[in-house]
Amino acid sequence: MFSYEQLEKYNETDVEIYRYVINNMDRVGYMSIRELAHELHVSTSTILRFCLKNGFEGYRDFKRALKSE
Image (cartoon, rainbow, N blue to C red; front, side, top):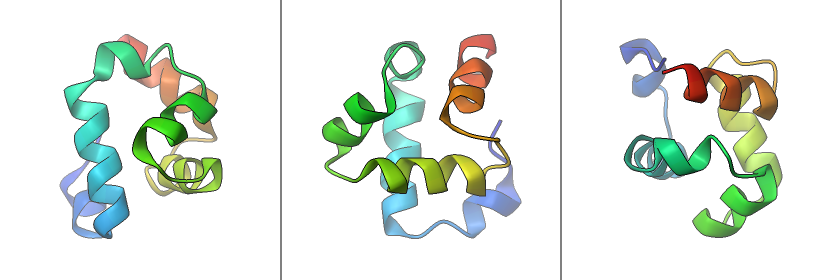
């Protein structure tokens, strides 16, 4: 799901989002983008940029991939 090449390009906020997602995969798959943004104290735009940076078409596509992991 997350490639090494993508991880190398992460900024500090991306790393925080990545860590939260990895540690809470079962929860994140059922959270709305607003809930996730609230948990991480970032904007929904930041979450969406994170999804796009990782090759997903949007947050819904990202959640679908999480659920299938």
